[in-house]
Image (tube, rainbow, N blue to C red; front, side, top):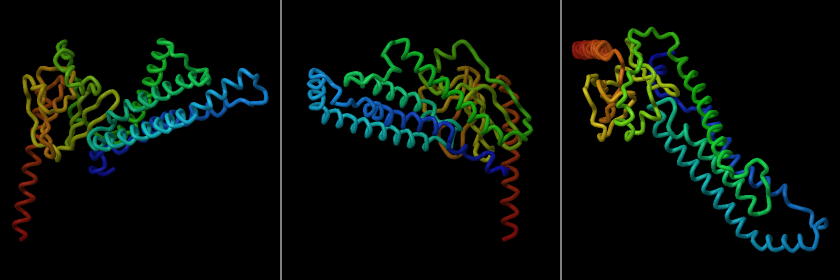
Length: 290
């Protein structure tokens, strides 16, 4: 695999996309199918049941309209999911949208199934019990995390033959949650380890990877503390002794928290300086050829 492919964008997470799409189709189809299956035979109904059915038929138009608006809303949320994922897919292997869209669509399915009881249709798998809702949420999250882990493992195959010169775990301190909780990203994307080789850096999380080639990095420097209110991306489990990485294609820096911070910074700066020298030599040769 060439360097551009290895350190390039992660590509679309099809495993998570398929999971989200399954819940989208479930939210659209299952309630509609259950409603059709429940349609009774009018010849077998008593007079009272027929009268009740006629009253429900008067509400059919409203229910059909509500189902239509549900379908439009679900498809609209799915389009928003695709747009959000597309905007972040070149930065990280597992987008925020792909992590939480399956839960959102599964809860829409739950709400729609629960609403069928108002029309005399029993879904038989939902009751609205709070404990049941907790199990539903936890179950969907566990499935999503397992799929995300598979996605990450597949992406790590790009680096299976890479020889890492520096491998350091992420440093943790007790003030992390109080200082970084408002930035939100560290809580969703906590790092596990940081790796560096002659070609670039790799931020490795529990459910994601973020590769950065040295060609895409302008500077790497240590900072005692970061301004958490500023526009920045935090892949850190500490609020002290951070490393600031400035990419070349954006003004928004990245902050990470390697345990062996000094070694990590020293190695990265040596690689960056060699890249500058190499670029200067190539430019000089080009001028001489002219």
